[in-house]
Image 1: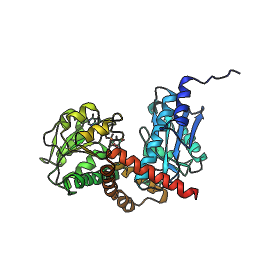
Image 2: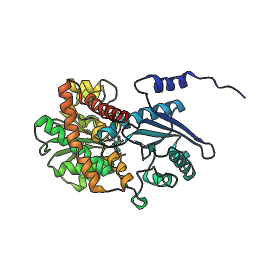
Image 3: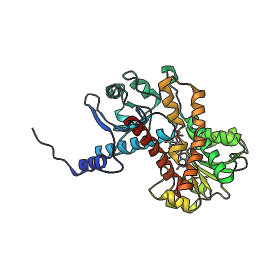
Image 4: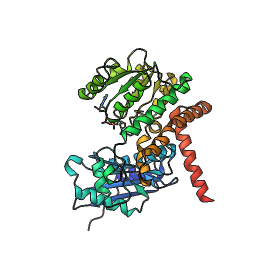
Length: 369
Ligand SMILES: NC(=O)c1ccc[n+]([C@@H]2O[C@H](COP(=O)([O-])OP(=O)(O)OC[C@H]3O[C@@H](n4cnc5c(N)ncnc54)[C@H](O)[C@@H]3O)[C@@H](O)[C@H]2O)c1
């Protein structure tokens, strides 16, 4: 039998886990089921506030080490997101390694469900990139700890309705902070990406009397909105054109991550950025560039928490009105973050992190006594 030597890459992952700020995770589980081709990583960053909740990403990574690092980063992000959403839940995330179009099967999802079940509720899963409501219905056949299921199976279904509602609350809070009034009436708002979340957000904005400009490479998504609201919405060719629209008040990235990079921040005409997309800041330091340009940034993970609030509610038997009431609180949370940022002289993204860290530290301290 051969002996496996510790490679530099593995050492890199373990170094991150045990010795860096990005690590500190409570538990990382490597799962394998050769019969179905399942290779998965379940990362539990923190259970300080309760069981670790976060979705399962199904993705073809360049390497297994990259997959572990992604699970570490994503689960850490969930601790912060759940803390600021006011949930009594910690942060976790799982990745299944491989191309879902090639690898995904009922047997693989069932095998994955058994691994989730084996953690006895320390980790609660949900949908993420590459996994869907129908997949969670299958996973849930093997574990009680799967949310994001279909309404027919006791789930809440599509989370984009409340995600859009939460982003809208974050925008109202931004308007309150910067213009002294939460209404978006007469404000010019640019929405980049009018998919599941973006198109609901446009509805809220129009209802509130905002002027809306949109873009999306999917022509049919744009046309659907233009047809529904003739003369009320303008479409531009792409995001490059969108961020340069004259007189823009708010920019809402609702497509992919990394929307705020050096070029977009330099060119942006808007005074506020508030949108649904995850991981909008392309690299550390962008939050400071935004602040230096006088642009108010509502942290993505705070304003897009409507979805996680919804899946968390499934654990208690889903109730839409209860969820909507919780998602409404995103307004107060966003305002509190802006106030803390001002008091501490730091960007809102850093203030959000501090508030989340405080909530987790308080919970740990309360447990220790
Ligand atoms: N759905 C949720 O409940 C939820 C919750 C939290 C965060 N998010 C995040 O919000 C974002 C949108 O999610 P979604 O569920 O609406 O996804 P989606 O795939 O339904 O919509 C994304 C839209 O963006 C468009 N798009 C892609 N590239 C673009 C570009 N360069 N410029 C403009 N538009 C572009 C796509 O064509 C698509 O219509 C994602 O980043 C997602 O991670 C979603």
